[in-house]
Image (cartoon, rainbow, N blue to C red):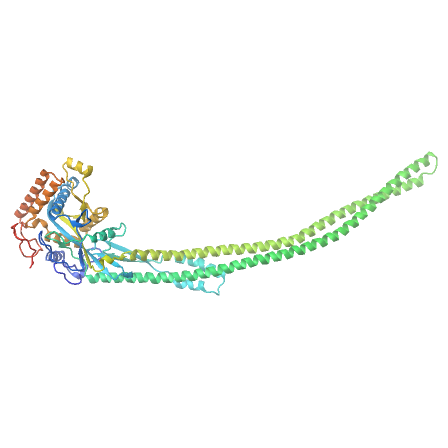
Amino acid sequence: MAKPRKGASAKADAAGEDGSIHPSTKETFDELADRVAKAEPRRGSITQPPPAWEPDEVTVGFAMVAEPSGELHELSEPTLLATILLAVEADRRGILNRVAAGFEEEVDAVANLYWPFLIIHGAPGGGTAIFDGTGVWKRTFRYTRMPEMEAVQPLLDPERTPAEHLARMKALAPHFSREAGAEVLTVEGFLPLDPPLLFDVLSQSRFRSDPQSPHAGFLPARHKLDWYDEELQRMRQWLERFEVDLRMLAEVRGKVDGLVQATQKRLDEQYRARQAEGRATVEAAAAAAETEITELEQRHHAELRQQLETIRQARSAAAHGQAAVATADTLAFRATHRRGDAAPHQARGRQAQATIRTANRQAEESRREMEKIHDRQRTAQERALDKVVQLEERQAQALAQEELFRDEYGAAASDLLQSLDGQIAARSTQKNLLEGYFLPLPSLASVRVVWFPLWMATLRSSKGLRQVVFPPMQVRAGMGIGGTLKRLFGGIVLPLEPRTERFDKVLRPTMEEALARDPWLSAATQELTRAADVLVDPDVLQRLQEGLGELRRQGWITPKQETDILRSYTDRLHRRAQRGGPTIGAVPTGARSEIYPTDASAPREPPGAG
């Protein structure tokens, strides 16, 4: 598409990303319409195929039929034409349209157009980029800016202590968790990957066929081919930025991970060394305490024996004293009874009582002293044990502090690594999303353009123009109960349905919305639809009658419906002729200047043939 192709539509100049015409073209819509109108759509006929295609262009078939042998061929042109015109009529007469609009629409033009998908080779990784040349779809890609990487350098200094590393990691985790802003790359012409409409389009590229329509119109691309090469170069640059960022982040993450693992290993070794040192210190202290307790027990045992001896002696003295008192009392009684002198005996008794009191006091004092000795022994033993316990407490606190530090260090390291992983994951996702549009397509290695077939109808009313899109079709498997009900109520079941669900649910409404809101695309398609309008073909009624007859014979329409549709289009074409529009057999606007032969028996050759 870098050079004009024989029979191909001219390509449009650059346009803005918002769908408007780029100011640099300095081209009004009237000028654009005139330029498109002068484009030469490729033309063939029923009996004569269009001119030979360029070898690097592929045209996709619109309605393919699979034979039992597996061979594919397109539905016959008259049957396809009749089906499309029936579909246009059904859309125009749709009850919902009539109720909602409140006005009658008239068919302005119906044409088979070809949508250009540009195959740009040389994408990164040897892939292929596919652009929708008309720019209906746009894809926005993000590039998250890199955070300042210089902030990591102090962390990687091996001379810093683990505590300094911890403080730095706590500061770096939010630094890498925050997004430092983003840049946006908007690529015009990328089909969406979700839903995967692009793959549905690509899957149809194997249904290759030359256009059957005598007026096959080829839509212009919105930009020149150089523009798509420049877009591809921009995407290459973005992918290179992603690669550089990912390598840098992977390198930094590897260094941080290595530093963290080395520090954690050193902390683990220190922890085990402190545990071993603590156990040895406690065991030595326990042995010293045991020795001290043994010495205390020996010393206190001697003191206790001494006090026990004192108690024994006191109790012995008390026992002798009690015996002396009893003896003195008896002797004093006897002396009194005998009228003798009892005083010496009484004095002896008093002296023995004093001895008893002194012995009892000494025994009590020894008992109290023994209690004191026990208390001193217990206190000394506990003091010796306390030394060991306090040492164990200090060791336990030190180990606990180290364990808490190790846990805090590990959590900070994990947060930092997760922040780096988040940066890597975000960039990988963004890179993969952009890279995912570069596909390995060896089957299209020599192809530059895939022409994607659409049938389009322009309907005119007092409210303006409305454009209807029919995507590539496939033969309906069967009529089913829905078709039966439609026929009972006078409706028509068409033998074709969209080839994939996404063609019906995504491609068709997206294109119709784009035609409604995009002035450039609307002007281009309207003019080209008029230029390739099948309703001005000289034999359109003959082909329509042939196609309707085939549909009637296959049971898709009734004879009355066949007659009504044929009469409707006959009257419509005559009304158009009376209003001054193109008549049957006249050359439509934008077609070549030659006149098609009106005699059905005359050989039909494309304009310019021979």
